Image (cartoon, rainbow, N blue to C red; front, side, top):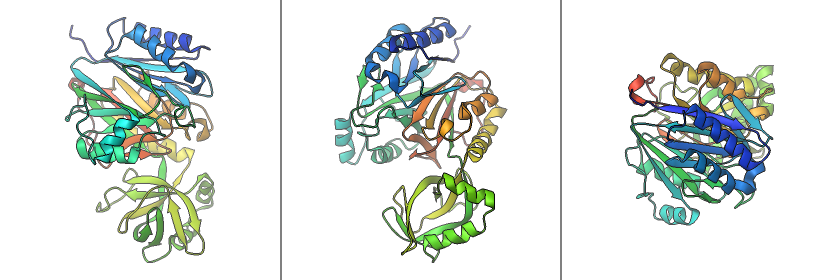
Length: 402
């Protein structure tokens, strides 16, 4: 019988790093019938940060994967569980016949040289025609905006998904797992090529409010004029037309979306790169947002809450529920989601598992999520970035998937 793609995931909440990594690895190996593993991704909680090498070596020795990657995160995700504030190790591993896996470890010093030259290429080990890149990076030592711009330029046809390690709030405090060992800076990238289809969902969990507006005057990340008016005046008009329920949602913060394709006739969910409104200047009527903008851009204010986040994820998953179930999945969720967003645990994975019961899935809560919007890869916040992995031979993915 021809070997087929198969993933298995497992989580352990054992008290020690060695025991948790060993238990999760043993469960995964058993679910893969003790057969050789091509890929293993490992995510560990901050409780085991000082024992990163122990975790990495335990997984490497047990599973012996051809490619290993992962990191520590504020919380870990595995199967149908989102584990927060509890010691845990989550692993997903897979046998991927017909898939060529490559890995690049990018240290901070190397990245500085690469990006300083204005080009990412060549990156040893990464294919120009990969179907997918998964990236895990340290937020303190990785210039993500520049790195993503380089990937968009050097690999324009390849979607990139992943997240920023979130176990430490200090430079040098995070740990990233690679096939060679562990590192405290830079990034690790895994490339997938060959017999694999990938479906990517980037759920920003927002709904637009008010009309789309054009930036007429701006400076860096400050918007000074929108459609002939100061932004604050435009916002006051929009808020005046909201329901009481919608006004209450402003307590969760105010957001603004930058249209990825401003020429599109009808802009809606999924067409905006959502950023937070960081402050206002009542005297000028200006607003400061969490990104740099340019005159001529089309933007729209947004609201976010738990109900919208759930609805948005459900809406984006619906087309994929009509096709063959994926073999496995990776979920990179903002550390502002989980029980900080929902009033119950397992908020995002419960939605995903309802569409795909028993799906082998792993991931972590990130300090920034990576995923494509409108054909370009961006760094997000408050987002659930999900990739569904399936063999190319099992059927057609929905139109518009990566």
